[in-house]
Image (cartoon, rainbow, N blue to C red):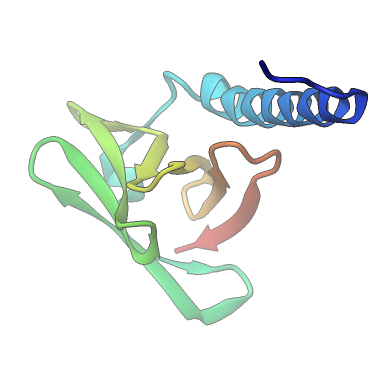
Length: 131
């Protein structure tokens, strides 16, 4: 039989609250952009961080099913985005557990915001890129 003390119960409830809060915040990011798409022609090519030309990424099409970011690597592979016809879904994932995720937001033709986050985290790290 397991005996749970008051302190043990308090710690368990704090952990559950943290996990629930973290999940809801990243799920809000995902849900907000769940069906959002960007035209492939608007995203392919090289992008640099707004305040430094030393750091660049590029988006490239992989077959008929994915677009990936080259130049940023988290987890096992590149961030991948699912293609549908001539557009891609803005939520991307890099293989890991818990998953590394990111969401694209095209601010205008030449500016792109990427929110990076990991499942079970509360905040996203946002970076602005430009053409």
